[in-house]
Image 1 (cartoon, rainbow, N blue to C red):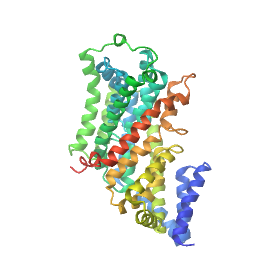
Image 2 (cartoon, helix red, strand yellow):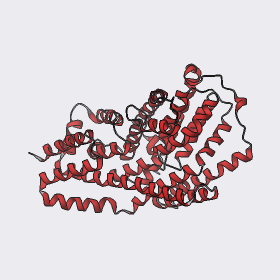
Image 3 (cartoon, one colour):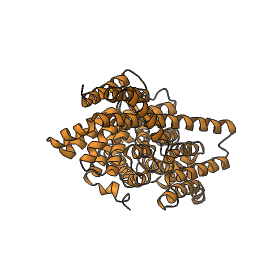
Image 4 (cartoon, rainbow, N blue to C red):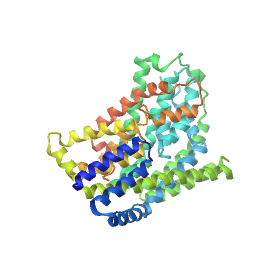
Amino acid sequence: MSPVEIGWIAIAALVVLILLGMRIAVAMLTVSFVGVALIRGDTVAIRMMAQVANDSLEEYLFAVVPLFVLMGLLVTVSGVGRDTFDVFQSLMRRVLAGLGLATVFANAVFASITGISIASATVFSRIAVPEMRRHGYSRSFATGVVAGSSVLGMLIPPSLLMIVYAVLAEQSVGRMFLAGIGPGIVLSLVFCVTILAMARWRRSLVFEAAPDAARFEVIGFGQIVRKAIPILVLMTVVLGGLYGGFLNPTEAGAAGAFGALVIAMLRRSLNRRSFWNLLVETGQITVSVLLLILAATFFSRMLALSGVPRELAETLLGGGLGPHGFLLIYILLIVALGCLIDSISIMLIILPVALPVAEAAGFDLIWFGVITVIAVEIGLLTPPFGLSVYTIKSAMDDADLKVGEIFRGAAPFVLAMLVTLAIIVAAPPIATWLAML
């Protein structure tokens, strides 16, 4: 067999192993080892695996993963999410569908200090959904808007997916973070337009009873300031330090984690046991991410050795498809994979094949990364996998709440994400102008 044939067989074998239930990292390592062994021999395969383990995990940059994960978990337990929602709820109480808009804005701000969509889904399903239900919103809409807006956690920096993409594409983490700001704002605005349109023209989908602004608990200006201060401090430390050039991504993660720890301690949200559990959870998430990155790096090198990416680029770009035809197929493939597997796994499987093609097509890899993250995040809302949907179902602990209700409520936000994708494809500077500074 030729190296190219071995490469294609390796891709097919990887898909089969994943469908059979093998863990993705194990499947990628196995397939990559066998592929290199068939192309170059067992000795080269063993040496390459050792070299990959060293090269892919030795960088100082990887310290950013546990730091941002720890910061997100500390922010979640300290009650900052509830304070964020309370601030926006008070500000939006007299606007039509104001609680839906408040949930989007609160998620956007919360995303800027966590970077994990599942954390947003967990927090706001417990805070925003009961409040919306109390004010006459339908259960499907209330859970759907939380699921939809939770995806902002992986687009607005700091973002774990942005870090993973930057590592795989060998791009600057700081530039990737900057590139997420514009699209994050656009997606938030498109979500708001979607909510307002539904409230005006499909009122029955939003409200079960007439909303009454008088039923809101009004928060005084002093309380708003008190609740907003921790949020603003963390945003200033992390984003101000990062974009002001005072801190690199790893240092910004460390400063943010320390700030979140101080806030949690001042609020007495932590004891020894809960802090230990947070550290263990941080370690588990970090190890799983880094193992996946190691496996994806090995898989990428095996494919490069086989010549599959080069052949694929020549076939797709030299035929009738062209660069934008490839981009359309790429987005559709990611959305389809999102129905089956989680976000990071999608990126680790598809990027080793797609990145060389995107580079050959002349795409800006920073812009391509933003497109990738948005497309991947659609999978959080689509059946049957829909991780954000199942997170909300688990966090709500409501026997009467059906998963299908949440999927229906999230459907308009899937359409909104597709619209946002089209906007960014049509206007790349939305994602690239800040990153170029």
